[in-house]
Image 1 (cartoon, rainbow, N blue to C red):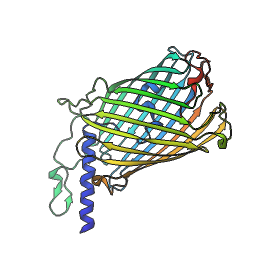
Image 2: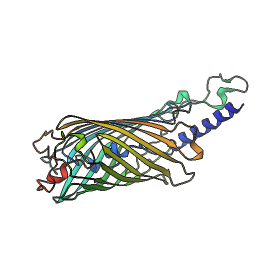
Image 3: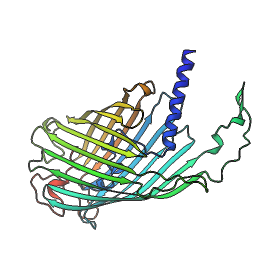
Image 4: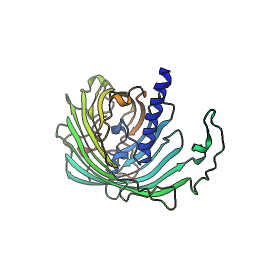
Amino acid sequence: MKNRYIYSILVVLSLLGIVDHARSQDMNYSQYFSTPIYYNPAFTGVNTGVRARFLYRNQWPSLPISFKSYYFAADLGDRSLPGSGGIGLQINQDTPGVGLINNFGAALTVGVRIPITSFMASQIGIKAGIMQRRINWDDLVYSNNLDPRYGNIYPSMVPAPEANKRVVPDFGVGGVLQFINPDGNISGNIGFAVDHIFKPDVSFLSNGSSPYPRKWVGQFDIVFATGPVSSSRMSRSSDDPLKINIGGIYQNQAGLNSLQAGLNMLKYNIYVGGWFKTTMTGVVNSSIALVAGYKYSFYEDMNIKFMYSYDLQISGALQGTGGAHEISLILEFDKLSVFGGGGGGFVPGGSSRRGGGAMECPTFY
């Protein structure tokens, strides 16, 4: 009886999760630092070279439902491009509600770079893409399907609506300010973005309306190195100083507010970190995201980074749901030049070549 009672509570909580998605909210990744273009298109090409990012999230694995999401992005930073910024592509998919709803998005992103000084630059980014929502009407259960004793055994007499898919255009815009000190041991960025600017209508019914709400994002990251930073990516990891990345991200969508803040540390090519996540509207749900990862350098201009995070629920409402698992894989080709304006490299105090020089090194790698 006790197990059945707990199971019922978990099912109710899962339904609440489905309702949240029905209210049209974007998936929120704990590793926001691994998916910067997802939150702000201005990060497209913020550093020269090519980067490919893969991320998988499994949320609330202990519940008898599936809340899984997949994300891919690739961007090229090249100072010979018009606007001296970059171009990118991102694809994301999630399936809330036991597969009843499938959300898919694909977009192209463009970054325009505005050099300020050798140690400060800004970028403006634009996202243009599509949003697709698909629903499986056949898996919906109505009251006339149910028998009081045997459960769901009768065929439904409710006709399915005329459409099971909705495809709409989707746009976003953002800006980021990037900075680094002359010694190269303090760097960071501050960004702001707005997604779903025109609130596309994602209703499945021709006589209905369901505008997708805008999402507002504010973010900052500051990186401190405890010693001199080497200009070579192939230097021994034991010689690299400890790097500490302090950051935070705030989001507002559909009247709901969320905040995430914490830090990551890098030493001996090993990442460890901890982040506090909380919602600030309605029922407060809080968790601690624990992060671990490893970076391996194949060559001076090629690196692979693997990171894993686990959301440990600390609020009473969602304890027992299994938290959330996230896995990210990032490939970096820092010196790859496609149009002749890539491969800026890290030159502390270096001159700004169309926004290059000291700003071309990733702030936390």
